[in-house]
Image (tube, rainbow, N blue to C red; front, top):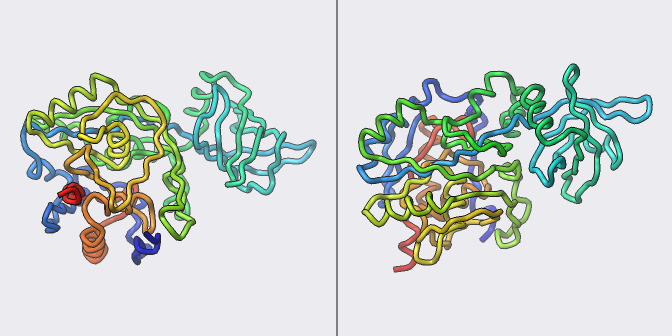
Length: 356
């Protein structure tokens, strides 16, 4: 398939720069198995679910991985911005640096003032990623990130405004527990304790799994053919106990409702050909495109994604490319808000029709 098959025109003013307040007031576009569209609010999601259904949520916690500092070389200093991408060792992280042309291997980077983080540039990859070797212990590194770091907002938001203290609250889900992401599992941002109480009182369960989201989720697809694209790898965990509860819910007739593409990608990585979820603790680079049968879930709640992105390809695989193009046209025409802080849709998994 061509990447251009997943392109669409998106007006710039459809990109949400702040989340809806209250969170449940965000819009929700229901796309059912027949491709019919229903406009609703996130707070109405209970009407589309039933007792016995199970929400599977990603409980990863976003690190404030956006750093501002300087590169020091002799007596000279240059302002540097670093976005941490992924831990590759106890004190080493891959990072994007800006401006990268001002940095070379061996340079010393300093972030913060009163409380400082120091790193040495240890390596550079051809794709522009750098390896930073921090000079603090792992515990000190995390502690100082929470003091001097900022939330690593997606580039399509940061191109319009800088991150601020409000993002430290807004860009974290209520499920956040396991620290390690540098991007939020954004479908989970719509949930509040009040909404969860309504769902659980209606017999809908919640199961937590963990996929640490990397900044690679925002990288553009630069190839022309989807077969040539190499997905970024992210580390995920599904415990044996979680897998058993998910399998039991489905065996009892409940539907598995993935909250976010990260939850779906992790479940599908841990799913056998019969649709049974296995315990999992590894990296996954799964790439779900139209033609792939998704066996691990029945519904997906997700935000509206970028044109030509791997995430728009994923929802097209789940619900059908033409259905999703029509749903997105409706969302654009009707003023839905897109991307991380935007509105959401609730999709039936129709990919299993391919097996009939």
